[in-house]
Image (cartoon, rainbow, N blue to C red; front, side, top):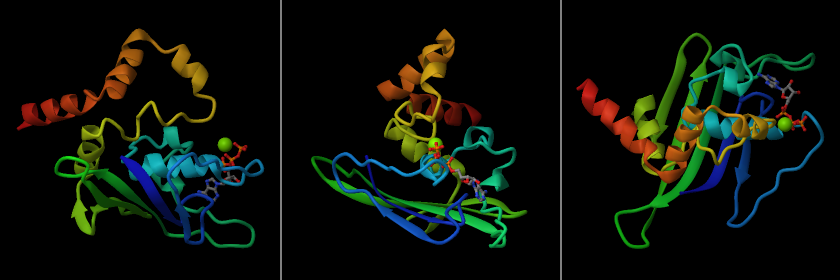
Length: 179
Ligand code: ATP
Ligand code: MG
């Protein structure tokens, strides 16, 4: 699975619509302190279904919406769209998918996959089956390296399961048990 493009609007400091095309190979994002580098990583985690506002450095989920500055009023929604390449039916086939998450003040989050309204769980399953997602060990937030090293064995096991690609099976098993 490869992220091809991110579109942000009203998400944290990205008040105006912004588009980031990610070419194959290594991409580096550089800029002065406070310019929004960490906000970009948080946008990736958020559109993948992150449910904890704390891990997005907020106290409530609406904190991801542009809060306004002395010169610009606050926005009333935030939206992130992520275009992905993912393995298709078989062989080397690649399929495109676009996941969109939008939050409006007082109305919570809504998700779409390729223009269809879906549940948070559908987005979680899409990423769990690809052994990635908002809690993928591949997404390392600023200052978290030390926390990973100091993790409890059970937490480290969860990280290894995610990395090994079996976390998706747990999601499906929980789902089956609830039915
Ligand atoms: P550093 O190099 O220090 O790690 P950074 O490039 O990672 O910096 P971020 O932490 O991504 O910077 O961005 C921080 C900026 O985003 C701050 O100026 C903060 O005010 C702004 N910001 C965060 N949330 C919002 C919001 N909801 N509305 C407006 N601005 C926001
Ligand atoms: Mg940062």
